[in-house]
Image 1 (cartoon, rainbow, N blue to C red):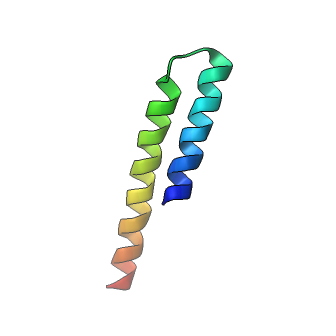
Image 2 (cartoon, one colour; image 1 turned 90 degrees about the horizontal axis):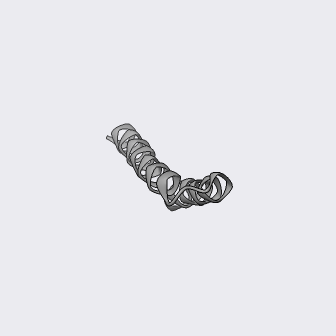
Length: 49
């Protein structure tokens, strides 16, 4: 979960620096990373039950 969020935030920072935006990609990709992590977590919990 942490790796997914970290990688998406890092990639967002990279895109912000490349295209000279002010944290636009960082915030949006971090939120997307959190959503993806929760989706994967819920999917794995469903398999356990």
